[in-house]
Length: 357
Ligand SMILES: Nc1ncnc2c1ncn2[C@@H]1O[C@H](COP(=O)(O)OP(=O)(O)OP(=O)(O)O)[C@@H](O)[C@H]1O
Ligand SMILES: [Mg+2]
Image 1 (cartoon, rainbow, N blue to C red):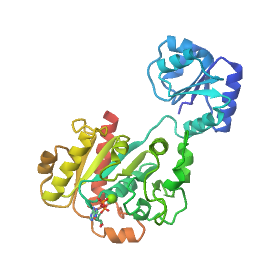
Image 2: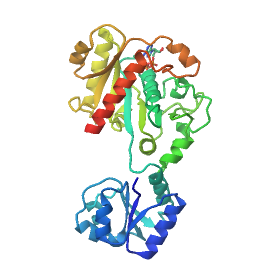
Image 3: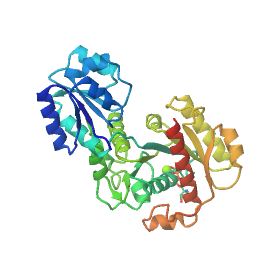
Image 4: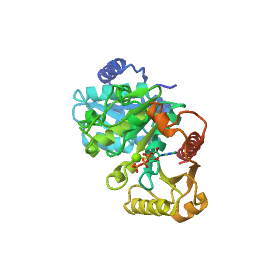
């Protein structure tokens, strides 16, 4: 694994960055000149550029890449901002004020070098179609491969921590994150959430308190961004109706669970139309939205034609579901059966699509 790249010829700045990196447990590679910087530019998982070399670097036109951050002493001038834009920097950090922000960033990079997990949303095509169950099962299946998180974005749902048997586990819930401002560390979020093994749950406070609404959009965005940096897979249990458009925009793919009856299909078709119309970052053509069929009835092909979306997975009803949930095992009690097959299928198709995108 290659290290975080620091680009600066300013000794004082380098000392400070190395000090902050050490505090964050990161061991960076240092480039004190532009040609060394360019050689390491593309392979580093993340780059911190000192304001001293930034303008020169921008002139050399390095290839576009993610995770570039600019750091300088005091307030950055217009030339720094312009050069920052030219190299595609995500942030311009001004020291010493930005030191703690930078420590969080470095901790984050040391923990999750240059990655963003797959974010999937699950919606019910009609009330009770099985979205919450499928979202939790997807999370369980994803946790077999790497760190995964199920996020409850439906304040009126049963609580994904309850469905996953984690309602007694200590850890942060949505109301604890309502006042998130600034950058939230991915590792600190992951470690603060209720978890069982590789699977975490972000849900509501027990009882009625805090169930009323999602936190404000800025806090939600920061939480989802930290969640995606800190997990290989994040699954959102989305609410039907107003309020979902912003969340849907954060998803790499949204799966709509449909029951194969005339009413189930009609309802799903309306829901899909409203989402695409509302411009929630979705395009039926781009394949960011697809169907999962639960139960038996109308054929998947006919459903796909009627709703105008591809079917990612089909499944018959899962036996023993209520019992597995009552036992605190989550919906995916065994790795066999219709629910396990459908989640595995949907996960691998979504992964293939995300890699190809
Ligand atoms: N795969 C499945 N096999 C059998 N029963 C299921 C399955 N998925 C869901 N159910 C049953 O359907 C009911 C509703 O499930 P769930 O809460 O997951 O639906 P939902 O789409 O999230 O509902 P809502 O629209 O209220 O959010 C539950 O009682 C659950 O046990
Ligand atoms: Mg639900």
